[in-house]
Length: 232
Image (tube, rainbow, N blue to C red; front, side):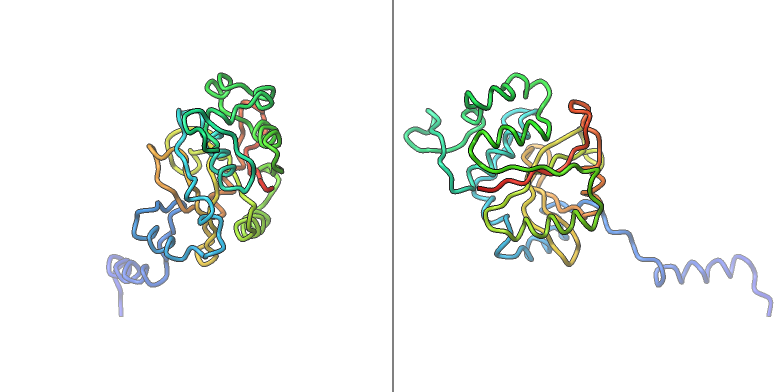
């Protein structure tokens, strides 16, 4: 039996859906159908539940690092300063974050001009009396990153700030800071609470995508972006 080439092509085309799976998107946003399914699986011990009452929006377009730090500091059981706006109640704001000790590291004007590097983030957090360590994005592979994130997300009182390239997520903008809030093992995704609420909703990204996004160059420090781990 002779089979024509067009007929053979149609047979092969019909078989494709059975053999080729559609690629999963690297980024899934909070209010999408897939995002709703993921958020329904957030475990009770994930950092999300400690962070969400304090999750704040950055006050200007370069204060992403400050807003991320303030979100974590307010979630921690530490002594908090009093902002005159909220006196007599103690509460970290993006104004009182800049204590005299923090200003020795970086001033508000410098952050407005260029944002914050990983090293600057660590130094400012240390001056608020918490522990802070950093991991460069070019020093970990996907497996090591997954282990680090899984452990931190399930450890009470330990939080993770992430410095990443928006371009690697297919987003507008350059380098950015936000807070990691949960890990979903079934999909191998981590939840980023994006402090630029006016731009993007919280997003679930695969570990593979996250690794690519932190393994990028911060031109201010001439070092890779990465993670900062914060604890009491």
